[in-house]
Length: 96
Length: 248
Image (cartoon, rainbow over all chains, first blue to last red; front, side):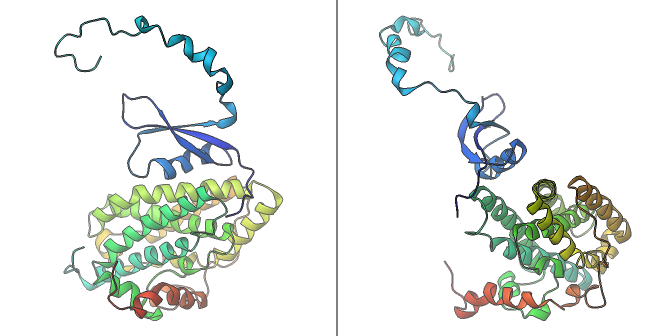
């Protein structure tokens, strides 16, 4: 296996069932989007994991920087009232 | 796996022919494991190989013991097309071989699935796999043919080199004609149209050289094979013959 490919990297998202959202499954190399879909099918859905696939060029993803972690996420830490934990959940409601 | 059924001899012969096609091509594709240009493509080829191996197992177990058939037969007893035994060559040769064979298999299995006969159940299941194999080969043919000067040259060379083995695919298999009423001339017409369209789309030239000769027409189906096949069989059968009855 040589590193001879300059193929771009793609991020693969798999929807495992209807009604669920697409979940990041991993990444792969492919020459273009159509081939990325096919490679994604072979790499991530061959054990019946999915009903729908998305591929996105990795370069198109803008990620938050680890350096900004504190200012991005920490202020939420001491604000428990943002979570809907102060309500009584009626019996019989399993998924809320 | 179930034992051999009580099929008519012509049906058994048909199962052997189709099963050998799948088995031999499966082994040829498996040869790419560890050698494919990129990891993603290696998985794709191995996936196709496993689909074919599954088809081979179902078909050969209708004929007899699948292991005996795969590992203990001599070259002359195999009934596969000469096309599928051709070495992988460069990646373009592998793709051209896939394009020719999976297009043939896609049309044939679609026909078998549509008609009532001894291969309806197998074809109904396999046709979805085969459609993907064909799509994979077509996508690559388009990209290699309409890619760089180098990839175009190699793809054209591969398409030309394997052309002489394509005539054999449309030699009637009696066991299919008698039971499913397979129309081989129509099968060839569909194949020609599809291949012509794919090659044109890939900016490749449809070969005009003979698609069979005195030495190829129907030869693989009669047990006459090309030189590389003996070496392939030696590798495929070596382990089983060295350690009879070995298991995992």
